[in-house]
Structure formats: structure tokens, C-alpha cells
Length: 248
Ligand SMILES: NC(=O)c1ccc[n+]([C@@H]2O[C@H](COP(=O)([O-])OP(=O)(O)OC[C@H]3O[C@@H](n4cnc5c(N)ncnc54)[C@H](OP(=O)(O)O)[C@@H]3O)[C@@H](O)[C@H]2O)c1
Image (cartoon, rainbow, N blue to C red):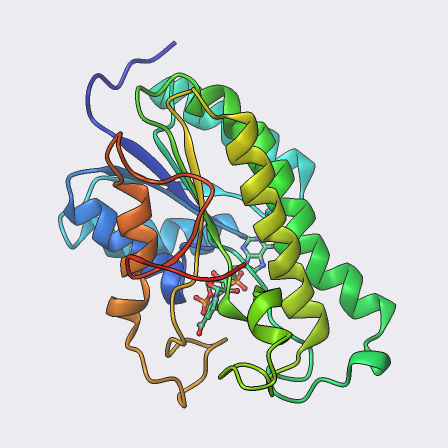
């Protein structure tokens, strides 16, 4: 098995655009080797070339997070090349079918629920399961789940909260379920070197966040990067935006 010594290795899903691309870039600038995972090999290769041209140490892998075959092949490739994984950023995600602000809860179709939960929840659990043996080989494993403030039940239940009017059921509930995964896995891994946290990136200018979003992507990646680089005394099992805790 290959050994990558002390140099940290991170894997970012959905690294070809948006917050994932910027997270890969910022981790690379920290001197971390970044496995850029994208749904197609062409997108992964293109992203890797782009980041290599910026002087970063990157390695492309094809990883449609919903594909068991891709997940197994990606973990095998990382294992053979590096023998471990220090940071897993579960960034890939999909939004609501009709945009983020148009949802009618009772009209949410089963097809949409399957699709959104398939990517935002089931695939995250499966990707994490696949890479956990490699994370256990790290002296300081970090798992970052890209959640959203829209997954906060506390804020949705408060009619006065800033998100109270944004009720996009399939997406919101998928991030609530993802937060449950964060809490459960963090509890299971308590006492190990692995920390698991949920990140709310902010409302960020990406294809999903749209041009209306107030945050630039460079800032939108910061929460993921901070949680990826947490020291041994950092939190685990928390829901965080730019260093601030959010209510579940
Ligand atoms: N932007 C915001 O304001 C905001 C706010 C809160 C939370 N978030 C969360 O932050 C994360 C990143 O969002 P973003 O704004 O950067 O979204 P984005 O611009 O829409 O990019 C989504 C990324 O996920 C990838 N992806 C989707 N399904 C995939 C699959 N089955 N396999 C592999 N990759 C897949 C996409 O790949 P393709 O190019 O192949 O489609 C793309 O790289 C998401 O989890 C999102 O829910 C975003």
C-alpha cells in the first residue's frame, strides 16, 4: 500500500464547480493533496488540470456519489495512491426541482424526494461508509457534511426566524436528515481521531445559490475549510457557519 507520509489528503465530492471547486482550491493552497471527485471523469480531469495550473497538488477521480461502483473504485484509487484519507468533504448536493423558493410541501413528488434524498442523504452515508476505513488510518480524520441552515428544525419551527418563509420540503428535510447523520456518526466515533461536523456555507453565489445570493464563493468555502482543518481540541457533532454554532 502506498504511503503519503505526513502530507494530508482530502477528498471533495462535487469538486468541479461551486463551493466544492473553491473548497478544493483553498485546501490545496493549505498544502493539502486534494482528490477532486466529480460525477464524470471528464469533469474531474478538467478540474484537476485547472487546479494544477494554479500550482496545487490534485488527483482526479470519477465519483457519482449515487453509484456504488464509483464509490468502491474511488476508495480503491485513494487507498492505492495514498493509503489513507485525512479529510472527507461531502459537498455534492442537489437542490429543489423547481428552485429553492417555489416549494409546496404537500405537492412534493415522491420522485423529487427520492432524488434529493438519494444524493443529499443516502449517497453521503454510502460515501462516508466507503471512505471510513481510510479515514481511520489518518491521525486526525475530519468529515464535513455540507448541510444548510434550511435543515434547521428549530429555525423552521419559529415563524419569526429569517428562514421561516423558505419552506422547500424535500431539500430542507434532506439537510435535516444529513444533520442527524452528523450527530449519530460523531457519537459513534467519539474517542477516535475522527471529527464529524455539519457545515452551513451561507447563501452563496453558485448555480444552486443563484446570483441573488449575498456571499461570494470564496467566502462560501470557508466553513468547509475551517471544519476540515480543525485541531484536536475542535468540536465534533456540531452544526457550524463561519465558526458560529447553528441550532439543529
Ligand atoms: N449555494 C448555497 O447558497 C448553499 C447554501 C447551503 C448549502 N449549500 C450546499 O453546499 C453544497 C454545494 O452547493 P453549491 O452551491 O456549490 O451547488 P452547485 O453549484 O449546484 O454544485 C453542486 C455540485 O454537486 C455535484 N453533484 C450533484 N449531484 C452529484 C452526484 N450524484 N455525484 C457527484 N456530484 C454531484 C455537482 O456536479 P455536476 O456538475 O456533475 O452536476 C456540482 O459539482 C451542496 O450540498 C448544497 O446543498 C449550498
